[in-house]
Length: 441
Image (cartoon, rainbow, N blue to C red; front, side, top):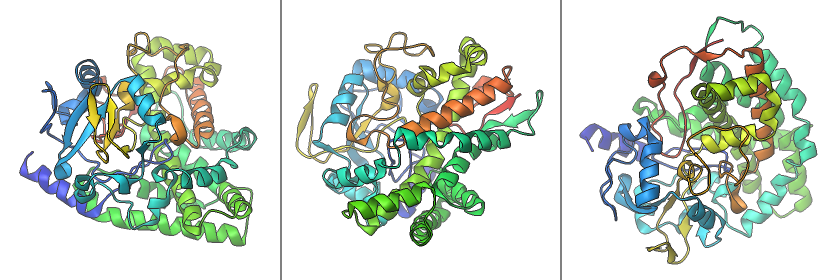
């Protein structure tokens, strides 16, 4: 790596960062352009997580899946030995095996010394994705009471109102920037409404969530402040809703916690904090990814325009398979030496389960690089698998279905405003995220 990149990595490690996503939450430290494949059990013809990789990640992941499905890799930050897993069946095995922990304290000495973990010492260490049973079980049971099908169905009117209000001034022929003006606004407004916080707080918190996953060195000094504000507001919101409960998720979590009587105040605060982070960030990414995927498959875009109801069936599921917001799950740490295929993963060595690769495994999905909204068959991993599957999956599906159906239904001729090759990804190893998406209505 060049001197500037090394300096940037050191800066990022010093300030830390948090990545939230739809598998409950993603907590990672150095979410920047990671360049260099220093050591591997197989020599690869590309640099993992380099700018070239981000221009075409699926070709690289295809190569790994075929040639080195359980791939030894040294993460450049801290020179941490770890593993990159790309086949669907191995991903399902690891995500469903209780011997693979998500608790960062179980990570190897190299991982602990690297600065890749940022949750230790804060309430973020109590968020559901970083917990193992039985603690995970009790906290998740408390949270699930607010995500029953009946509860989530009550979101419909809020979503409809928010989508309509967001695009009320839009008209055919206009150019709009879909990330900033649409995909980023709608999920944050829905989540803020359902959690029970104010418009002013929504705007500030949406900016803070963006900061937490920023890869711009100019943002690094501001990241600790963003993290502290989100934590402080989560705690403030819990205190407010305990004093003045309402018909919102925060109040529901408090009632469930009081009835259970077995989760701590930190666990309750962390539950609300993770809803703020994950709810705002990941659905924004998915909406952007979904629209771009439809642009790349005009026949499928027409299918939605002709029958928006397809999204409520197989459509959203296929869009999640094709490009979920999450490229890789949070770290998994084996609690003992475990063999996967012909490799033994030592206890504590971090494992990156590449959902982006598993969801396009040709051994499982026919013609996997083609979007087919009528596809049925194997379950994708876009919302996770095992005990850490997406807590808010039903809500995420509903927001996505209603939002995409309204957008395409009103503007069936929607198209890119720039050449396709000018659409740029954020160079963040764990995410499928795009910087901007200019469109013509």
